[in-house]
Every structure is written in C-alpha cells, then in structure tokens.
Length: 311
Ligand SMILES: Nc1ncnc2c1ncn2[C@@H]1O[C@H](COP(=O)(O)OP(=O)(O)OP(=O)(O)O)[C@@H](O)[C@H]1O
Ligand SMILES: [Mg+2]
Image (cartoon, rainbow, N blue to C red):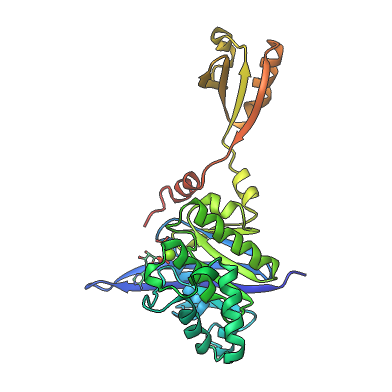
C-alpha cells in the first residue's frame, strides 16, 4: 500500500490585506495527498495558492480550517522539522558568506556535529555541481548557482521530504535541466519531492503525479499525461499529395492549418471526426504522414479552468 507523506483535508486559508482588511481567500477547501517516494509537481497560475499550501505544510503559517498531516504528524510538531527540507520561493542569501560558510551556518542550525558537517557539505556541493565554487562569495553567484546552493541548503539535514517552491523559476534551459537532474537524483535516493511550478514542460519530465490548483481549489490530481490527454481537443493530420479542391467533403470536420510544400496539415475538429477524415483521405488514396493529438497547453488548461471563475 502506498504510504502518505502529506495529507490535506478541507484546508482553508484567508489573508486580510490592506487598509480595509479585505479578505483574500488563498485556499478554499484543499484536499490533497502526496505519497511517500514520489515526485509531486504542484501546478497553478500566479496567485493560485501554491506557496500558501507549502507554507502551511511547513508550519510557517497556520490554517483557518481543515487538517494537515505530514508523516502522520501535525506541521506544528517540532520533530517534523528534522525530516523536511524547504527551498522558499524567494530565498534570502547572506551574500558575503561563501558556499561552504553558508551551508555550515544551516548545518549548525540543525546541530550537525563538526566532524560530519565538512563531509556532508562537500557531498552536497558536489551533488549540486558547485564543488569548484566552494570558496566563492554568494554575491558572485549567478541566479542558477544560487538556486542550486538553495537546494543544497534544503538538503543539509538529509530530509525525507523536500519542498521546493518554484525551483526552476528564472533559470535558463541548462539551469532548469540541472535542477531537474537534482530532483531525479533525490527520487533515486528514496526521498519524497514536492515542487511547485507554472511551467508545464518542467513538470512533465520529472513529476510522477501532479496536482493542479486554480483559485485556491484543486482542480485535478493524478498522472499529468492522463490529465492532459483527457483534454485532447484537436488532432492534426499531415497528408501529402492532397489537392485543396479535394477538401470540400471535409467541411465542418477538418480545416487546413498549414501548407508545407506538398504537405498539408489538417486540423481535425473534435476527436469524434478523426475516423471520418482518415477514411476519406484513404479513400482518395492520399498518403498520411502523421496523426497527432494536440493537447492543451497548461496555459490553455488554466484558462479553461478559470473561465468565469476568476476572483
Ligand atoms: N501574506 C499574505 N497576505 C495577503 N495575501 C496573501 C499573502 N500570501 C498570499 N496571499 C494571497 O493569496 C493568494 C495565493 O497566493 P500564493 O502566494 O499562495 O500563490 P502562488 O500560487 O504561490 O502564486 P505565484 O505563482 O505567484 O507564486 C494570492 O491572491 C495572494 O495575493
Ligand atoms: Mg508562489
């Protein structure tokens, strides 16, 4: 049986802001289970409640209603701090410290003995690819390097569960690939990794499961492929050797999306029309190069989920 690392039941959190103390509902009845040993991608547009959820699990802020369990304990249970690691969304770095001093500072917060600290720090710097920059001040670090030292910091206590809030934000493709590799390594080491993002391809490659949050409510949880494949809205059929005047019978079923030399890319509207379109092309003895379902992008998914529901 899969064991739960984190469980949220009916979690509600509102903030009062501004002069008028206007209430902002950040989470509005969130139910969520994150299993032990999985990489969980927490997806949602800006302001949807990702950071609020992570801070609540971390015990940094407190819920108004509902229940949160982390490793079957309350986030307020101090013993939990020893088994979790956290990379905040906008981490603050003491930039006059060098990489080793910075990690040593956090290691001491966890009372890790000196004899173990040195070795652990060396190992972590190697893991995040910064061993050659160990003695350099953080103020000389690039954004990607800071993100990696932040991840090393989150791992200093050898946590069972690692929470990374937007670990790939602001990174170039190489930096993102490096962070993805680190996350995959953590999974291989048996850790549970929870990370938030609003960039679909970053999540797609590495998450075992995803949760999609929109306007403080979980819209979907599960395997990302399954979530997105439920939403195939178009199918592209690329054919070669088709004359445009042969397309008339396809009216209402498919239209020309692009012409690439002797190839025509047809956009079939609705999965239910795919059979009819392909049958017709075969009947015309025309070659089919490819048939490709076009999944909604995450942005389109968010937009369709938020339609008429914006705050
Ligand atoms: N401390 C706070 N005081 C007032 N409102 C807050 C506070 N923290 C979050 N909010 C509000 O709660 C909602 C959810 O914010 P949250 O930071 O959790 O979103 P997010 O999904 O992490 O967004 P982003 O992708 O921009 O990081 C937003 O409307 C935000 O303005
Ligand atoms: Mg956030």
